[in-house]
Image 1: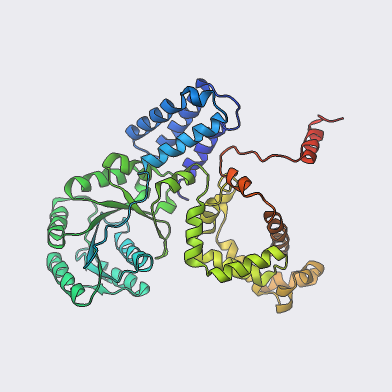
Image 2: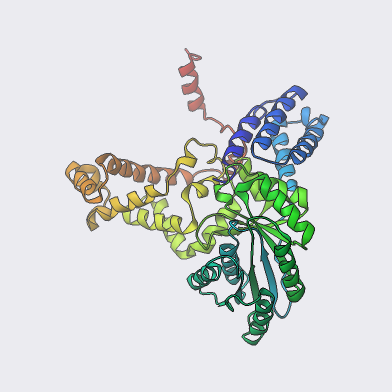
Length: 465
């Protein structure tokens, strides 16, 4: 998962200072030493690490922090703000033409996912900005590049303009004429890449840039290549008028060095990130949200946006009402799972919930488990799905369901227990103070114990007689 190692190391470092009533310079120095090592291990550029740590230290050493209330949380806020600044402070939009055709030129090296990303971006802008896109196949060198773009376009219902192995400059000229005739308002051009940067590739892209006068020149870079991604961005930016980056494979980059270095080194904004293999898994890059994810604070805004895009509001409200009422059954659980699957990887969604990323085994959550659960539920009778108590009371029913689903009886028992726990949890959530939910987003947060809980804790330690 994205930033998995960095998040883990950052949380360990920040635990040194959160919860302390007072801080001294030594506390901050120890914390920053670990932060520095965390960033270097994440393959963040050395100069970026140096400037970042110096800026955080300069603010954290202030008398207002050291002698203020909740100094640990104030330092966490400084780190969060500086991470946000490092990645660009705010999300950068696509620069659309107010009238006529908006042209986006996709550039990058082979293997970065440029062709697939062109399709993802076209689909995203079609749905989010109500655009009518046309994909243009201008990569005539890579074997099957044109066929790949056509396949992607077909799956998304987006037309592809191609002229075989005709000269790329001619292809883009004809494509713009065709787009104007057919009233397309967005043209996304998939250009040729190479295994490495060379003069022929750059000259061809410069010629296409001159012909099309694009609104955006977006560089596709593989986040998993770390510092190499930053070097590629730097070289392309020196040769072309790059207006933005798209980081692909961010979901598989456990380090995150590219995301934290590109903006600072090249001054090119990261506009989008690829978050999975599905053609719908692309999202706007929000620096402030990404900073919160890195610090393990969750990302409620992105979670809400995903839910809004994938889940019908009435369907969600009906589900919530049923869960809160305590009449939740296996049919409802199956519907709930299908909703979740539409939103993306389960472990990724969990990390967007404040406080969840610090829990053990979140990264080990396997989406296959959802398939196994679905198989168990599908092996139940209609009555068993409607009335969970039937399975609770009968071991023979549980054994039959296990055999029918190809899963173990232990897994069936675990599902029964999960449903019961879910019911109880939803009842408790109905009584939770919203302020407490917000506080859970802060690393090192410790919930206030009730008097009974404090007494029970004291007895365990031998503090009460």
